[in-house]
Length: 391
Image (cartoon, rainbow, N blue to C red; front, side):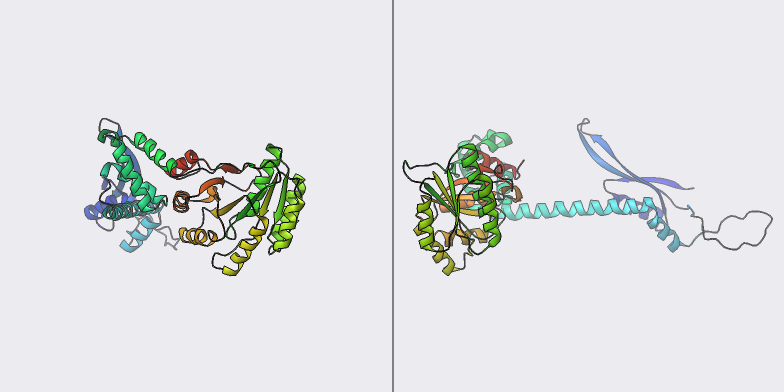
């Protein structure tokens, strides 16, 4: 049997060599891959190997009636088309084909990555090559291009040329830039000596305002031992009222459901012995001018000490920008970002805080009450932006 072994950097290349040297009817007998050391043994590269035969025959196992004969006869050679089919259907052939597809897919991924790199590089030729990977990482994490460019240029001015080739040093300086652009509004703090400190949460539908209210109330009551009253202006969703009522019952907190400006003002007055009043509002579409005007009137009646705009990190940047523009016409003092744990990228937090020039009060990192909420810390957000994950 004419056996030969072929080695190449990819399975596709090895299969090509088999076909060129032994023809299209060659039979694959074995495939494998292994790592070959190079450069003093510190680096390795994967080698793909195929063992094939030019004249191997596959016996035809289809049962056929045979006439009696005195001696066994040699099996007849199968046709080339049948041999190719059996090769492809064999485990070794299927393994070789799959490995070849994987190699081609990885090659395409590398090509796409290189094209994206060159495209980004052409738009920002002023970014030095040694800092470009950091710039590209910021862009991939949804940080605005002009913001990423500004931070990289500032870092370039701050460090020596030799430090630009030290990734950890550059990352440290970049984290300092991000922290500087993320002012923290701190936690909710009572600023009055008489009367309740009133806090209202507003924002689009589906961002998690009601759950966030419950987390804030639970932390204030259970951990800070404060007296907290709850008011909901969300008369549109029965489920939201029921959800908040369950939390109020568990915490032993008074809850008022109101729908007019007069009822809102009366509810606030009725809770004069509370240290904090937290107001949940119905989600409003940024495009619904009538509902936003109604919200503005209800807030005026409540006269809150602070209004937090609640935004989701999973929303598109276009939706976030629209929400900022519309709700700013109502009133925005601070920002809360929810669903940090669900976001593929958190660069949008930096973009929003920089754009609206409002402090970040809280971020939420899950659904558990009261645990999955944190005060917005610049250092924590900088780590998330640079790492691109919650880990």
